Length: 497
Image (tube, rainbow, N blue to C red; front, side, top):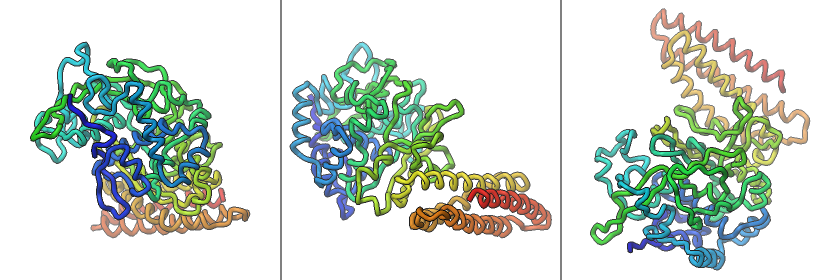
């Protein structure tokens, strides 16, 4: 039997504090997490998916009852090797296997069953960046059948294939339906990032989410029946969800274990029961007053959803920040004076087709997470920014053309991104919120930025597109419409101060 021990074999890329790369197994990585900066895969999808698996491993091993238990782990400065080893021994005693190619319990896979597994497919079907099925050939022009992955590469690809799984003829989607935006807290070390990514049983059950029934996938001996409808999901099961029934077929090439083919078909199908709430995901309400996870959109930068990501307002009826950020201040206590750094990761899809990977790293004053008033202000301000961007398109696109308007919008968002995160957010965080006019001060500061942006858009439009008399006439009409709309927006902002 082929053996690849996921606990000790090096398969997880990571970065040391000095930036040098290293590859480690699960236990070695967790035991050294306080000495590591972050995960280091070249694929953002793999990075997040492995991060999610590690969070599940830690929550199942520690089973923190309350947020204080997480705080104690954080204050200890490292993960306890004794706790981790005891957990592994418990899993093994129950019959679980951490061997990637185990015949009875292959790690994060279904055991081979001739009843379901009739035909193999190329391992490329698991890799988002490789040509397979109806997905484009990106920068690799080999046929899908020509690809061969090492055991480490195959496992990393498998993790990402589960988390960022789309629905279609091949089977159901991931536990969060269409791939959504995932939020990761970027701590000073990987250890700190993982602690914030965990939640306790009390935090989980207070949101009416089952903790571990069904259990984490490597402790679940139930058969993965193709297209099996699952009426409910637990936190542990959701973090290691198997929307595909996958079994690796190992081969040895030059003495190394590799994977060229896999058995792969539809897996578990969870369509939502109204209770599942992913703690790493921001939510909005739709027109039916139903909560749905925020999805990445083609051509829309992820930072534009920072209002939903922070949204420090428990009374909000339209947005809900990720649970790991909602409890960030209580967990970190004295650490909240510094900037909060988060990474947003998303995969843009069209049905079963992968379009693009999106990612943004944002640095916000931590006060935006803990103060409801700042959360409301942020959502309102971002809505006004979106409104001005709409005016760019409606004014210039209607009179000139959509391509010109889109280019002006892109430039507008690029400058606004820099202005917001380098100037506006730090300014607002420093204002004394005990004074009555603090909202007015914040509003005036952003008003000045929006006025400058209005003038910048007009200057760029006139400079680049008004090349003859007719174009000058059309540009003048577009500017008139844009100025009028911006004037109404700024007036409304003044009235709401």
